[in-house]
Length: 288
Picture (cartoon, rainbow, N blue to C red):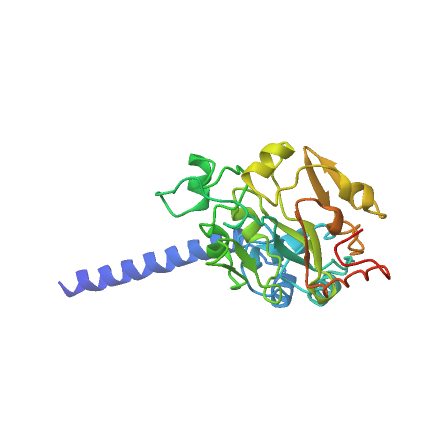
């Protein structure tokens, strides 16, 4: 009986050793040697795992950077120019500095300008509401106000204003990760160049309906009149599909476009108040 037990123990031990040897050989044969630069690159990334680079996380983006022959088109929106320069140095490659960007909400359809015509009683998600109907007003392009953009922001950089019903971006917190841009089913949110003192000039409307229809649905809609296009000395404004658009990289912030807009669709943010023009001597105020 004791011999049987001994034989069993020895046999099992030999099988265990043999199995371990086989597993070791297989592991060595299929072993993946990871490039040590991946760890170094990952350390330089912000670790936000926000998906702004279109990868599932910073680790995956680090692997993509190491494997790429050219990293000029690869960018982490949260990383600073210093971070990306350090990564380029690790990889022995060059990368151009990027312009700082910030999210901008291109809709000014507050209840004051875009009155509600019905009440939505459904799932509290913009993506669902957008697929079901136009919205609580007549504008088919206006913000639905259900906060999909707020929920996807990992940086607490956007919130809904209870009074206006529109999302508000906190420039100092915004990392331009692009999450809110992707989440908005109406394409209202856009990443634009971040200027000094967070100053911005943009057409706060994306409605491509003809002027009369757009104005009927929202008092501050762009009506495609083209006055701003003619006024801009830098050719920064284009007009297409009844809608004006200001290129943030061509715009010099001269502020000549906003005063000529008949519907006040062009917003000027963080600028000092305009100086009132002095009345001509001897001409009563209000007379021309």
